[in-house]
Image (cartoon, rainbow, N blue to C red; front, side):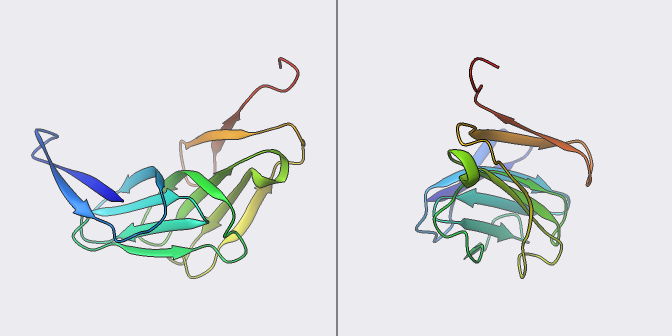
Amino acid sequence: PIALSTVSLAQSFTVQNSNATADLRGLSAAPSGIVWASGTNGTYLRTLDSGTTWVAANVPGAETLDFRAVQAFSEHEAYLLSAGPGEQSRIYKTNDGGKTWALQFTNHEPRGFFDCMAFWDHDHGIALGDPVDGQ
């Protein structure tokens, strides 16, 4: 998989090799060249140098999850959203650059399925999912 970075206000792109074996699904940039990515098999990636080097890792205990969305706030703080039916849809948070991840929310609706998330600050966000019974 590769990650792309913009140069000169999105006028061009540079291909960057992430060296990850997972399929990548989400990308979120924080200030100062910090970017987090998310993917299959419980994978997340982080770069602290605008994509020159990427470090890939897995959230412990989440190796079967598909992380479809990521929200980066800094080199230390990020959220990951996994998608899947029922309790496979979860939200995790790290405050230490991915050394540890805390489960923030689990979907207990068996037919629910998270699709994406967005945050407007460090503590407030929204997760969207497929409708259940048309609602």
